[in-house]
Image (tube, rainbow, N blue to C red):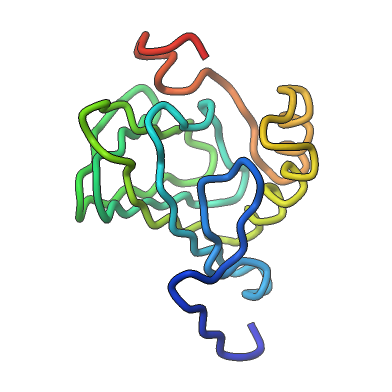
Amino acid sequence: MTEARIVRSADGAVYPGAPWLFKIGAHTGGTFDFMVGFVEHHSGPPLHIHREQHDTFYVLAGVLAVQIGEEVLELEPGDFASVPPGVPHTFDNIREDKSPAQVINLMTPGGLDGFFDELGQHGERPPTHVAERVGAEHGVRFIGPPLRVRLGLSRA
């Protein structure tokens, strides 16, 4: 990052199909990505690993279910989880009685914005083989179903 950056509350980069508002990403020169998102009910990604990135979550509101390895935990406002590279994980809002979970997501090093940017060029719901190819190019490998499927709450 070569200069200070101010990003107002409603500003940031949005990519089709991603629940995140990237407050900063590429502007850090790959140091980190800082995102804020609302995780809607049954909208989480498949179980995946990041080759190089720590994936960190801080819950602002609602309840976020997180699977880390085989363990499933529910994070509430003020709770924090950090998943190191190579560890299988996913997350979702599995509680119908709760509003969308508002979450801060910090990725170190950065670069996830490139994944969402390229993936978004294929529409809001690109085919699985496209997501897998784009993920592989950006250090993300999908290895299992979304949490809602694992828990038997949904088929997809």
